[in-house]
Image (tube, rainbow over all chains, first blue to last red; front, side, top):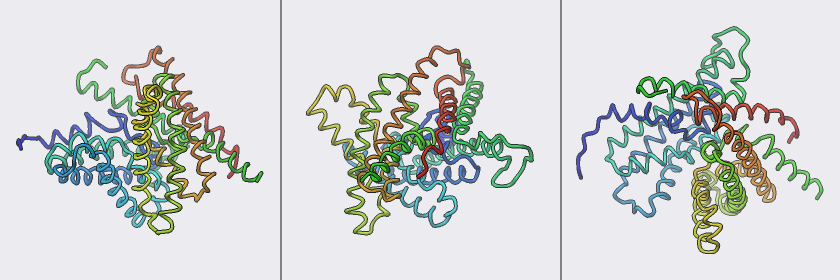
Length: 204
Length: 197
């Protein structure tokens, strides 16, 4: 096996900025709106995805020599749904309050294109340590996006953060409503693109 | 009998309009934004999607009620349902290619995309959670399919116009589509309270 020198810092940065799951790739969008009406749920969901992503990447990269390429997709799906079931059951046990609100979306992590895509594109071709760092990078990017969205939605929609009241003015109710979620994500995505374009000196 | 019929009708209306999967439950967004660029693909996707969803949720109902519940292994439902959906999509892909190549040429690409759609997994999970009967499960799946088709077609017709509009550069593509979806969702919020279940 050819040893490639991989810069772990670059791998993580790639996951957070260049290939940010929500803002740049526009994948796995369902929870980005459904669970982000307060900061705590957003962070919990992001952490769950981070955990599943890292564990799936590790498992796949350890198993990559035993998986026949023709049946790799069903195997990946099985590994992912196994880890999602574990996350689902531990969430139900340790955070029953939050689980009541977002249980369905935790179960639907199975259908995330981004997790399957990383398993296919990175973990099945790379060694154990780089795959782990790739998982951490992609998961952190997702966590970052979810926290950013839920931060703004809770601050504008309720005037509070993590359940604590901060602003005592009349809040903009629309940002808590489903419709406001779409608008908030759209605006944040545009701003992210704009800043990223400046950073990369593109002609935005 | 008539109350049964009313229940089914209510389920279809509520799944398609009031609890529209795209606008109030935020599922299937990846496919929604990916496919709604052109009207033709939107229509193809909705037809394929609705039929696959009805059959696969029927299959999942049978497996859930006759295998998982008697053996008391309902905690495996995520793995089993994704297996059923993926297996069914793969099977119908193969069968369609053999039996009707013309139809496969038209709708085949959408079949491959469907297994990454969250709605197709969410409907069996909701059916299992709410303990719907067989008829109710099928009609719930049908209603969800109609709702998704409605969302796709509205969005596709707006996005075809949006191509010509002068949108600020960072907002082009997905961001502006998100904002438009938000405005449609606001309109759909008007349906809430139409039927109480």
